[in-house]
Length: 324
Image (tube, rainbow, N blue to C red; front, top):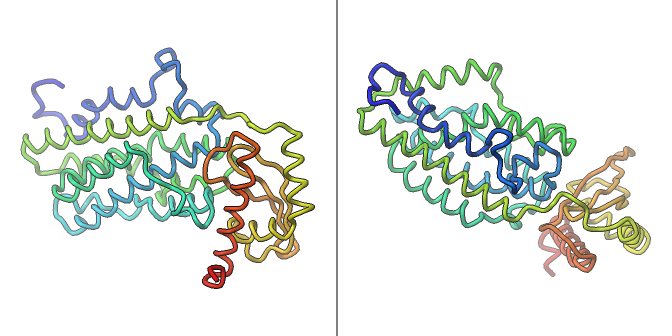
């Protein structure tokens, strides 16, 4: 950063200071590492739905920390102008996770160690200092309104989402550029002394570093995007479920599949990520996907996962009676 900062908008100083961090999250072609990461896999269509869901789940914990801090500062003269309802993501990400993991999603997601550290840092600094909230909300929300739009487009293309599943990336904002310009104007209007401005910029860099660490940990556990089960195994499992356990299949689709009014159901295919079913609801047939709780690689892992889905579904449908 140049030494003289008096004639440059604060938003420009933030952008310049964080540009190298921003570039490192999504480096240009030719500078990428030999190990494809989440972004690479998403854009080339090889990111398994399971891995996309894991990434989405990590974001839930980060936004839970940011938005709880936002409520703390909603009426604050410094941070309050940055607490904007149009930006809040928890409602949409909750809907996405219920779609991706099923109604019992809260029981099957956990923060990675890097995510836990990231959220803990937000809870510490963003709850105690208005600038901390501004730094972390700016880093995430402006990113969602910019590069995040490309992520949403890629997710909709790769997984065939029509709304839910990638609703996290849709904002109730008519013109994103106009909104972002107004947001940066609020940054420029902040009445902070030089020490607090520098501290806020440092906190933005910390946010980028935490986000990078989460992405690296996710990359360590990425699948290769291929189906671990061959056609013979898929046909055998589907036939067994549809012929020997038709009633159980219907219970799973009614419960974990979120179709309590379904009158018929069949498993049509599966992979390491989950299983696809056709269900009949109100005399109309539709296809739904029910994800496994984790990535499966062996045929022997399928049965315990189906039993788990049936048990969870029975409990969802019958409540306390299921415990007796």
